[in-house]
Image (cartoon, rainbow, N blue to C red; front, side, top):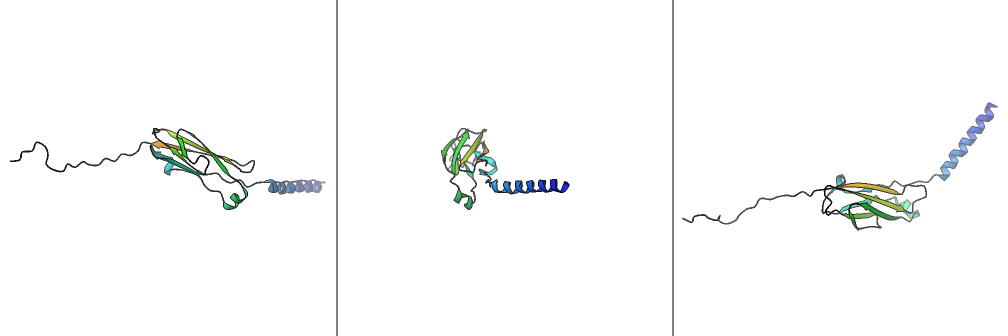
Length: 140
C-alpha cells in the first residue's frame, strides 16, 4: 500500500514538473539605463534607454514602448526604446521615468521605472585679466 501511494505521489509530481516546464515562459528582464549616477545637471537632457532584448527574443516578438514621466517633459523618443527628457527649471527635484513595453508574453512583467536627480549645474568661474594700463594711472 505504501508503495502504491509513493508511486502515485511520484507520478503526480513528475507530471506536475513536466507540465510546468511546458507552460513556463521565458520573460525578459527589463532594465533601464540612464545618466551616470542617476543624476543630470539642470538644463541638460536626461536620456533613459531600455537595455536591448536578445536578438532571438526580438525575432519572435513585436515590441512597442510607451513612456511617461513625473516632472520633466519628454522631448524625443516617446514611442522608442530611448527617451529624452527636458530638465529646465527642475534643479533640486527628481524626474521619474517609466516605460510600458507592449508585446511581451502574458504574465511577464512589462514595466520599469527610474528616478533621476536633477542637480544644479556646475559653474566654473575664470579670472578676468585686464589688458592695457589701469585707469587713473599717472603717466609721469
